[in-house]
Length: 322
Image 1 (tube, rainbow, N blue to C red):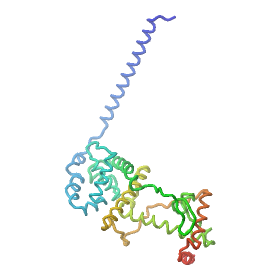
Image 2 (tube, helix red, strand yellow; image 1 turned 30 degrees about the vertical axis):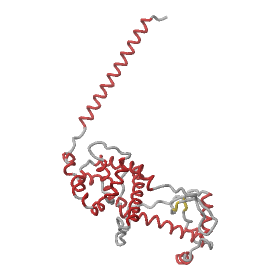
Image 3 (tube, rainbow, N blue to C red; image 1 turned 45 degrees about the vertical axis):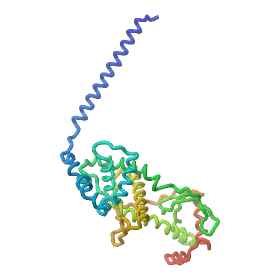
Image 4 (cartoon, helix red, strand yellow; image 1 turned 120 degrees about the vertical axis):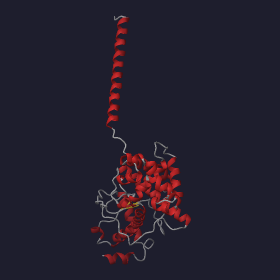
């Protein structure tokens, strides 16, 4: 049986080892921070003049704030809408560092309004490109959190019968050949299948007309927020946040137009060039179609060719294209 003195000695040795490990950890941390400090590049003199010479200090504060028309052209929002979005943003985003939340919002809006690169915005706002990327990422994330519940509510109404019928179908999206058929996604019949079947041709025609609504909405969206005219060089998660935020801002602008009955923020210019060719078409995947989705598509096909669901010009239009 070991004596009490033996345990005291062992305890002292253990404590000594723990203290030595703690000292080693402190030493490692010391050298790590020393290394990080010594290798950190000095701040460029250009960025030190941001408060005096940056675009937010000179252009926005001293000029745009006094002209609502130019302010709207620069940010795509008028001052009232800008302040509204800013107040929403401040609910979840705290003031931190030398750059205010207001300037961060201005920078992000300018980015999505023009599609300028971070390097280009760096010369304008006098903020390093790497920090701009972090600002844009954080602001878009917070904007998505506060704006989606207001401007992109999920429909709560129960599905209704199709007009002039007792056919009830669930809500679904409309897509092209790139998407697989499912209960929540309707896609057209394959061309080789629909070519010899008038009812399927009519379904494809009616589906195309429905898709045209979303395509026109995207056309309006891209006319206002020109980032869609450029290659979007941001992380996929940030891009998802950006798209949701842009849809919310689009709805905000449309609601403001409808309430005030004034000129919209941007009118469609049909003489302007079409969307750029840097968009890559999705390759048709289709895969296995959902059996319930097939059932819904058959019901829609029959409805579109019935007396209750047909439109006068559909058959003439389809036969003209054949």
